[in-house]
Image (cartoon, rainbow, N blue to C red; front, side):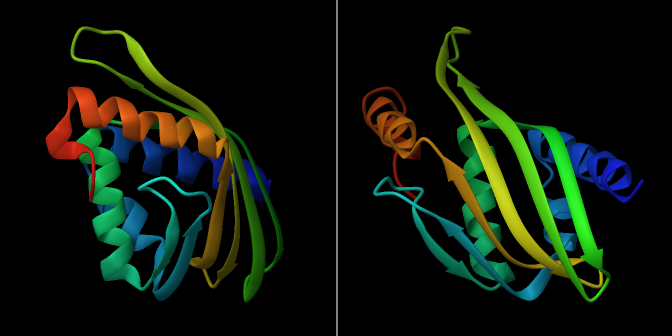
Amino acid sequence: MLSWLAKLVISRTMARARAGDIGPTLRMDAGDVVFRFPGDSSWAGEVRGKAELERWLQRLVRVGIKTFPDEVVVKGFPWNMTVCVRGHDYLTSPEGEIVYENRFVIWGRMAWGLLKDYEVYEDTQKAKALDEWLAVHEPAMAAS
């Protein structure tokens, strides 16, 4: 039941982000949230605090990457929960061609309904290839 409810909330939150509104995502994050995106692309790094995460998420929306949760698993007590989201994302060019497609897992820790710490695992080479595509086709969006 808890995982079903979490999937509902995360699905709606990601739908709002796909529509350009990252407010619901930020409301799920603690003020001192820590976010990690491994790799050596321009997306990679460790972000600390809601304000820094907001800038990272704004770029995701500005570039136009669409994220979808396929499965959500939540366990634990309200003060120490683990959340895992398996999903997929993609980006289409203005001509409608899919120029980026990836699968991801988000592994995080929540306390009292707020994400405290989470990390995204995906094919980091695809993220790097996206950087290269953006540099050629959308230079204004190539770097944060």
